Length: 129
Image (cartoon, rainbow, N blue to C red; front, side):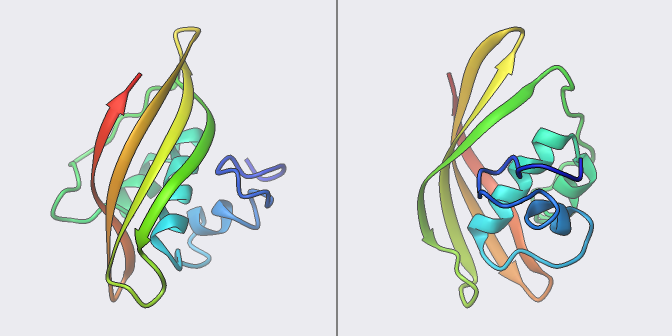
């Protein structure tokens, strides 16, 4: 994926938004930016990026993405801290997807931590519908 709108819903192109992060051409400045780039990694099937941005304390040994799931939209519901000068942040979001021809959604409150290497996903509390 290189052209067109970014799946994260920012209104920017993929190349100018999450694509640059996926290619290692910068780091997320905020917890929300990292969360959006991780959503886009799910949408584009980039398991390596997801693992690389997962905090080592909670990162799984591997990640198998279901290629039959089609991610269709992201809505950021709330953020708490997570700015460029913060060390911790929380992002609440709803992600829409289609699985087995059925529209579904994931509602998650995700926790992030920033260290010298940048923002990382720590864990989330999710509900599926």
